[in-house]
Amino acid sequence: SERIVLAARPQGTPRPTDFRLERLPLPAIRDGEVLLQTHYLSLDPYMRGRMDDRKSYSPPTPVGGVMEGEIVARVVQSRRPDFQVGENVAGRLGWVTHSISDGAGLTKLDGRFQPITTALGVLGMPGLTAFAGLLEIGKPRPGETVVVAAATGPVGSLVGQIARIKGARAVGVAGGPDKCAYALDTLGFDAAIDHRSPTFADDLAAACPRGIDIYFELVGGAVWQAVLPLLNEFARVPLCGLVAEYNAPGTGVDRLPATMRTALSRSLTLRGFIVREFWDQRPAFLDEVGAWINDGRVRFREDIVQGLANAPAAFIGMLEGKNFGKLIVAVDDT
Ligand code: NDP
Image 1 (tube, rainbow, N blue to C red):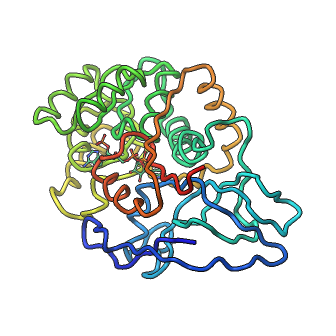
Image 2 (image 1 turned 30 degrees about the horizontal axis):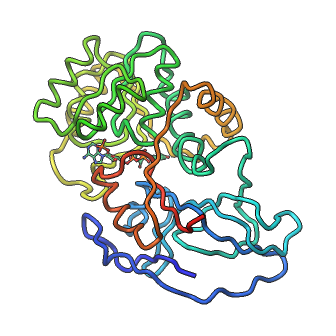
């Protein structure tokens, strides 16, 4: 079996040498255990946080430890009555080709949903993040303007589409003309603005003639700077991610004074959240978003990379926007 461990803590942008591929013999399973073979590994921006030795909402990955991550896997051996060989499960087993589990934390895949990769994206953790963050914190009302960046990724794309379903106007921010075209033509955003353009701030203002009522924050940095002057009185800001800053925390322009001044003068609600807070909403989320996918109101896109050995490069690229859609590694060839 193979696994990828954290070889060194990155300084700024991670490098391939911060990861190490290890080969290990497969141990035999004991009573009460199952052997899992990974089909798919999800790559998510939060993993960058685990690579740093810093206080956060979860402890860091130790140097030499397996990189964390959610997988979809097949049960290939079972010495548990509740898991049968051939069943597909999801679990947080990490960047591995095989794993042994006592069943704790494994979820059987909901057979209603295909392909099974959706369990890692639109119908998995990122999807729930968009659903709960927008509906519980953003609370979109018809006619309001909702802005979200990383608009073609799993979280941003669903935020925009749910905003539209709720009658709001959705403005997406994305990197480059291809992603903007996809946000407009396939995802149905009302406008899509390229944050790499030199006229980005003016373009965003022009796309939001009635200001911004909800800014679903995924990136921070220059996008937040452009959004701030456009926020309306009583605007809501679900604060979900700051991917522009994960490789360079605390550097760049100090936006704190302007942020605080605007929060005060416009009566903003800025509310941070981690998706696990809303885990109990999974059944309702799966029913609703599953139905929207079936009737074509929600589209999703997956960016699938082949082979565990290619996971580090794909992950490094994602933090710079090289992925186009939910980034997933196909670990076996089935
Ligand atoms: P994506 O697949 O959308 O990947 C990240 C994207 O961020 C890139 O593709 C890129 O898109 C964009 N990006 C990177 N750097 C910048 C930048 N400097 N300025 C603007 N955009 C940038 O990721 P996810 O949908 O999985 O995650 C999106 C965010 O949600 C992340 O911040 C993540 O940490 C957060 N999150 C938070 C959760 C929570 O519980 N709070 C749970 C899940 C996700 P582009 O090319 O379009 O710029």
